[in-house]
Image (tube, rainbow, N blue to C red; front, top):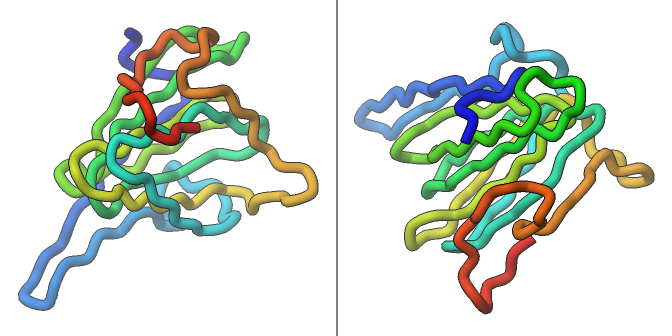
Length: 158
């Protein structure tokens, strides 16, 4: 398994706690990997559920897990990429806060790990286009991507 994918950036996030709670900056407009703002959304995954695979032709994704833990997998299928065929696997969330920046053309997905729902916050650089979605999908067990999510029988995946 390749350890890097050209254009993918992993930014460790810092948690700042005090007696009132804690704060964690996720993405700032003055970060070197920030390009433009599209929208902010949150999604969840129940324990052991996989949400994969998809990629965008235009959009750059910036996402993190703010509650629970998730396994993130990325696959570089871009013909022109120097890292074509590389896979990355990351574990991010409360125990390892990080922002994952994924350039266009890189397949990605995640699986909630542990026994609680994982909360995923995404700040893509483009808003979702309902008329012409910039989203291209494969099932989690697609033979086009040499990755095993360890799918559990009977659970909803996709």
